[in-house]
Image (tube, rainbow over all chains, first blue to last red):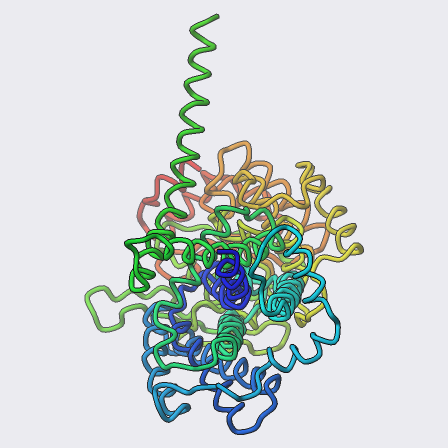
Length: 323
Length: 265
């Protein structure tokens, strides 16, 4: 049990980068960008193929992010210059990427077994630090008999995710970042303050899909393979993370919201892992569970708010009656 | 000359039953510090005139020249380096999910290149606070409030400040008090007079309120059917009354001015 939660948290932090990308397009740019299903795989494919061809894993991962950036900018160009509706631009790019991803990989599935990855690169260095022995020692003392093989992936992913979060927070407060946010908030207004909303949309979608592809490349290295269909439903998982996170952890400020999105990604993985432990649920039910989670996260806050409001009014009427 | 519209014409839906000549061979020159009020009934071409100047519409023929630069073909966002604008809808001029200071920071970058440096700095905050104090609405104490929480009047006052404090070459006011209740409209009208004078802005203001058109500015133009049919300035404008304006319209057009809103306003 502890181990499956542990690996859920691990992958939660890897997928959190994808969720941050979805947050940028969906919330900041107000652009429901379905490119994600394709660009996630593009990241995985570019990362995997680069590694197989001898590119150092870190560089391969950077290539993956660049490929995602490129995919995002094309969606942006379709939307702003081609005047194609946002949803349709994303869908077109998504199916185009399916073929492109197949071309990159040359076959539907590429295995990374016995190839170097970012994670086993780090693990070598990690073992010298002796943190695993220390943390696992603590766990054994609490009575757990089975301990994680390594803490390296989790710790590294937490650090990477937090760094990406902090950069995102800062960026969204820069002059360019403010204009980017205004593009999603009130396009007409920011255009009247000499911001090129077309360019901002294109760059914004590029950054968003760079994060998605980065996440894809890390997932491929974590799982040991890239598969052409591994991106199916990814946008919904991203949205689930954003929406669950916002509902649970709040949206008071940008910094708070990006933290909430990361939290949402982790919570999503934990919930799915726990749900799959239920006897009659199967792996194939995961998408259904995801859809239900999103629906709950969207509807529950409204019901709670409505009930609070109703009880507030009831209290007021009561006070009046008692007077 | 700050603004020079030369022989600008624009026709919508040309060749169809809905054809509309929104502007016909319009010429308009604004000198530095001119404050021109524009009146006319619905469909007279006032909004088209504004949109042609701001660049959201391109004229069929003719040219738009700002400070001796021909900007006719310049895109709207590039042109807005020179032009500040306040819209009729109080929601249109600000970003609701962003804070007051963030909105001001975006406006502050209007005539600069946007960089990857922080948009709201300590120094700018102090500056923003100073500007907000001139509105007398207490907004200087609410720098971190989301603009969506402000009332329509407060948002329009903020829009006005954002459009003006970077001292644009031209200020366009597009019926910017029309959507407000009378007391808020008066507040914004007064603020408009103050800021235009303070920054000595060259201003073009469209209004449906004739009294406002008479009270503000040193020049007045009346439009009808896509043409400027009357221009008054200086002392002549000071002596003008609503009755005289309506009579003048009747004399030129040989018909009653049809717009109730214009007469009642």
